[in-house]
Length: 118
Image 1: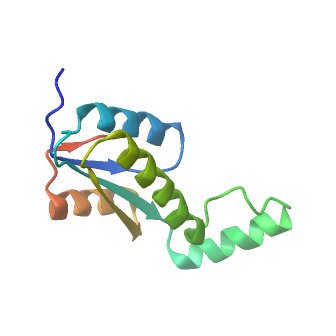
Image 2: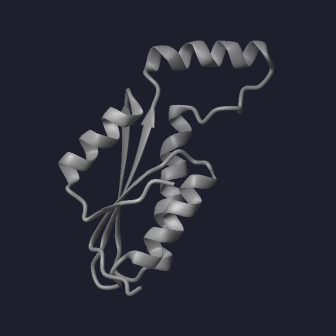
């Protein structure tokens, strides 16, 4: 299959699903001016406080991707994609709330030609 998508949306959860979706996007992206949009949805801030307390109590502070780490992980994926696809722009978004609703909202706003869900 030839590469021809100019706008691709990838919901990112930092699991192996993200890796699979990014590899597919790299294969399907145009090599002359495509845009790949990475969207990560975090839990509401109040819930993160509870998770942090529980993890500290369980001595597992690094079990989850806290919101402050999300931005750096998205930047890592952005760099990987830009290195792999010539003339590709990568936009990153961090949304807070219900995963399905926020991905749907992002798709309506961005209007990508393709959404790759791992």
